[in-house]
Image 1 (cartoon, rainbow, N blue to C red):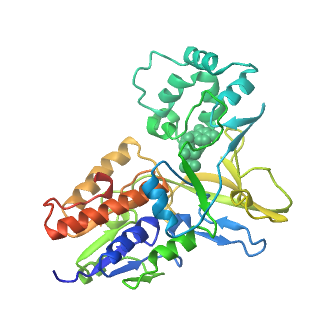
Image 2: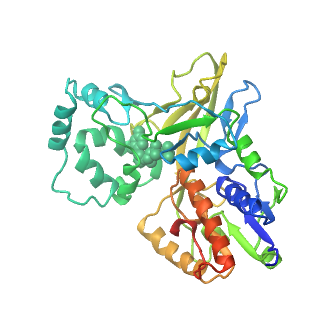
Image 3: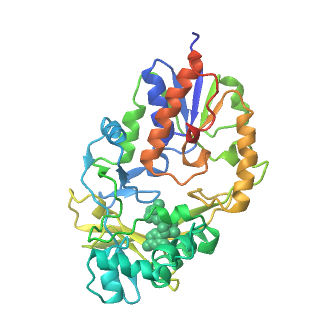
Length: 384
Ligand code: UDP
């Protein structure tokens, strides 16, 4: 078999994992990224003034139930023990979150046990909603109006810039509801943050004699002819020059606070109240409890619509977006040598472990297809 000329557009987690899988099987890859660093949105660096690990594009906590993926990432980094425990700041007080037995008892001033709490919330929930179709219906069905208004309505409206009744139920399904005192944000068995940060982990994934990385390099249509295979991890609409219109994304931005001591006593405090403009505040030194720092940095997070110059973060996936997406997917399927993977190229809200899993699957399927073991060409990593 001839040696193919492969380019991977994007040096984030998906591009890096894919490059490594191909490189480990003898395929040389060029990885290009328009940013001046690798690791995409999970990029971390040390804050120059404090030495605190800064999650430059927002806090990322690695969490998964998948032992294979947990082992995979630990080939490239040592995971520091961190369990995310989020608090919610409301006008009436500070509550445990995600909603658990403590939250229910705090919020309603009760002392329910798990069985009683389950019955209590079942009575609050709207059982006439059999199959919740929106975020709002999902909330009203499972937590009832009071908890929905207090914990979800304002946060979601600020975060997504639209009514929760327009959003899919899948967004709320990311957040568990528990009838015990387990206040971990994520339910996954394995959680942590790389001790040296995500950037070092991604650099190690890319550290292979068959991989070369070119930063500050924007992918352009004219570069297509130089390669036999293109693996694209950028925004799908951008790949096609927005010719079918723009897919909707929310972007986030931060006000940085520097202070001495402890700013808020926890890594994450959420602010669901509609009267407060920000959604949450993350104090980054609390993500590395194995370190100690006298000073602190905290980031007040705001959300807004993504303009042409902004970094796209959260795919909105409203009804018009899904129509536009179908058009771009048809274009993608008509290609014969382009493959799409990762959050932006598949236009989905993805956790890091899913990104890794899909990149591994795509690499495997691509190799099978090249060998002729499967006839159908993989197009989107999300479909394998
Ligand atoms: N959410 C909310 N209140 C909160 C936290 C989350 O309403 O205090 C909703 C909100 O719509 C958010 C979704 O739950 O977009 C998923 O939250 P997650 O923490 O997974 O968001 P991420 O950390 O990925 O931004």
